[in-house]
Image (tube, rainbow, N blue to C red; front, side):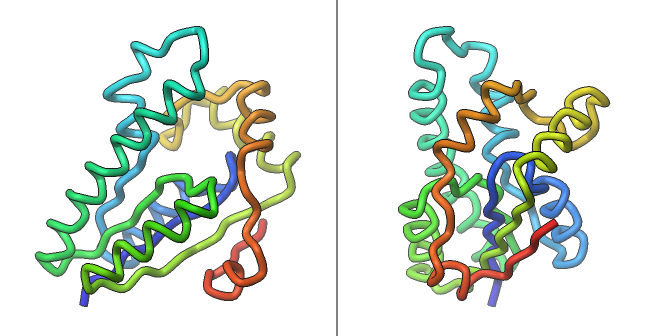
Length: 164
C-alpha cells in the first residue's frame, strides 16, 4: 500500500527541508503548494486583498495536487503533501480523502518557537537557499502566525511531532 505523508507546521517550521529529507528516505514525490502557487500565480498577485486571492488559488491547487497524488498512489508510489495545513478543517479533510481512496495517511507536525522560525525565514530569504519558494516578509510571517490553527491534543496524538 502506498503512503501519503502530510507535512504540517507554521511558517518557518522547516516543512520544505523536512519534506526533501523524507522524500529521500521514503522514495516519495513531493507536492508543495508553495511551488505551484509561485509558478502559476504569484506574478499576478494583486496588492489589494492578497490573502483572499492566494487562498482561492491555493484551494484550486490543492484539488489538482490531490488528483495528481491519487494517480501516483495508484501506481504504488509514495507521496508527500506539503500543503501548509494551517487549518484544522484541512488537516481533517485531506487525510479522510486519502483514506477514502484506500491509502495510508501519516501526519508529521513540525514546530519551533516563533523567533527561531522567523530567523530561519530571514536566513533562507537572504541566502536565497533551495528551500526558498515564496519570500516571506515580517508582516507576512506575523499574519501567518494569526491564521495557523494550533493542533489540538487529539491531532497531536495522531501525528509524529518534531520540535526544534
